[in-house]
Amino acid sequence: MPKIPKNATNALLLSIETATGCGSVALTKGRIKNGKVLAEAIAQPEIIHSRRLLGSVDWVMQAAGVQWDELHGVAISLGPGSFTGLRIGMAAAKGIVYACKTPLIGVQTLDAIALACPVIDRPLWCLLDARKQEVYAACYHTGPSGLPEQCSPVETLCPEHLLEKITGPTLLAGPGVTEYHDFFAAHKDVQLIPAALSSPSAARIGFLAAEQLLTDKTTDPATLAPLYVRASEAEVNLQKNKATA
Image 1: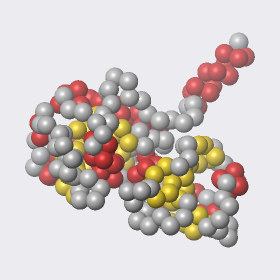
Image 2: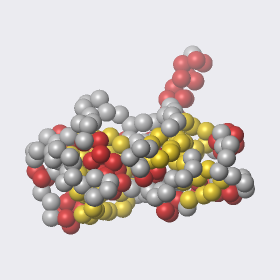
Image 3: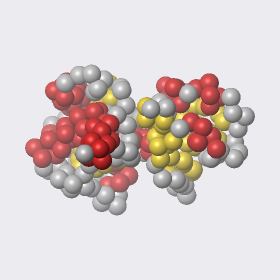
């Protein structure tokens, strides 16, 4: 395993993002302000077998001409998002780090959405579709470093409750905007950033992971789990069955 650069300037990371219906795999080199994408592939993790995801991993490695022993780490999108996609991505990432003996770095998916928004001059709410007429949401502002920082916990909210939190000019971004576009757009203080311009990507997950390497924020693969935020349908039904019994 190659030694991680002290300032992560040249950290070479393989990143996996499967929290949404359209996932991606990328190889990145460097941090947010100086990094570059070496290769990136887009897939649909919810409707294909996990082997296809690993096929995308193999493709980006070959496209960039990178060997497994050159990686400084593997970055994984933690969620929230699709339960199925998160499980597939997490399993693939853990398999790779165990095989390559390289560090694993977890990155919140909403952080990648915030990073896609170049100018944050007002509160920014990043949204993912949580289904059941709800969105996963967290608020961001610009931190001292000039990069977005999360300033509220990740929540599961119905669109109406989200708008109740808005008290002035506000940006909404991410795939969660699409489902409720007309409803959000009708609010006088809301400006929407199209999902096409603010979706999470494996490349952004990689750059955020490089920043985490600065403070040695790697994770034990045995204990790392997706950020689901709420219980799955199966878990809810199990609790209902227990209560009935």
